[in-house]
Image 1 (cartoon, rainbow, N blue to C red):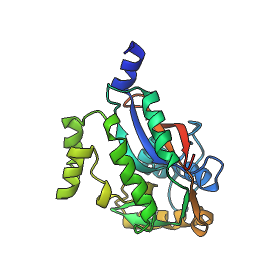
Image 2: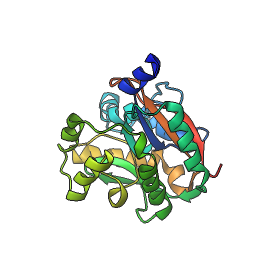
Image 3: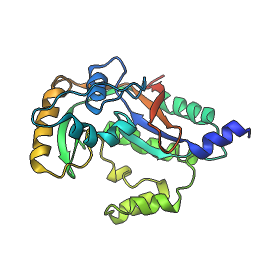
Length: 239
């Protein structure tokens, strides 16, 4: 292993996400909402929200902006030192070849005091895709370290979620998986939460009325612990 590969393994995290096609309206709207395009890396002017200051809106979209507009399929992980980035990319490519594109509908929902775009939890194709990906790509994940376990346990986890955390490095997999595209951090003021929900419904209205095609999944990378996640490769399904 050369020094460059070693630095990648030690300092970078990778994640496998659903991210809308770059040319899609949903990608444009989501990037505008959080204030950053995860593909280009460019900051984007956010929409104005009635009765919400731009400073507050920027603040409560900090984490979504960090991670990029996405839905988590396999949560951020450090690469196991036995593998290279090319190994991971080749594996994802082979995985995607056996999966056919499908469609879904999205809606805005308040969940645990934050806003997200969610789909019908009974959508079996997305659940199956995420579950198979977690299992089939897990050997690329470096073992989860105790500080991350402790951080995750700051949230109230069920017994199955805690078991998932220890075995798969993330609590919300398999029966605990909930597809969501995070739009805000926790909003403690109910009035602000309702105003932002109304604004999100209006902002994303065109994408809420139309089916969203799931035709690819994406590999994101965070180079250092204080840097943003960027989309580094898109993998087409069925190819």
